[in-house]
Image (cartoon, rainbow, N blue to C red; front, side):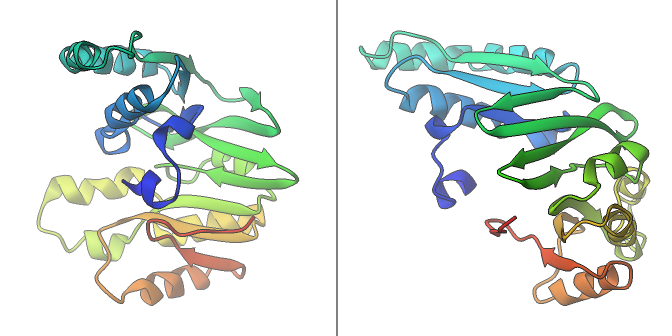
Length: 233
């Protein structure tokens, strides 16, 4: 739904980048795969880049989709092929290109979820870093150095600590706080720092509070990354 709202249909995709295999980051993958397949007028391969074990996840997903694939093949006479997925498992230092786009992978730190990766996407002289879930680490610093845009999952530890549930409080262990992410942005001298996947879910009208916390540690542009936010690199 977010792809469609952004004006991008799944069949327009050539590739997907996964930073890690936590369920909240991959639970919509099967919908993208199915829609990409059904909407394509001819066989088209969708590449899925991700850390080790991505193939395991995709294989399991395709097994789960088996009944649905059979139903659709039976329903549409002109649909004569099954979903075509190419998995590329990436490690730190891997670089791949597609057209004029260059993507570099680096290790991040979301332990005990490991390995995890972030991506630096470069095109036409601009660089955007998609960090995913991670605490500050050397790999993230290297990825962000001099980037135009740094997109980071952020957590308000002051709010999370108030929640009377130990498992929720443990999310502090492996996510960057707003302060930590802002400090990463400052160290790397990025131009724009984007706060995304905010934990806990921000209350209505609280965006300025989050930005103010980051502002104490980063002097560049700060964007509160609501869904469908557009940024020019």
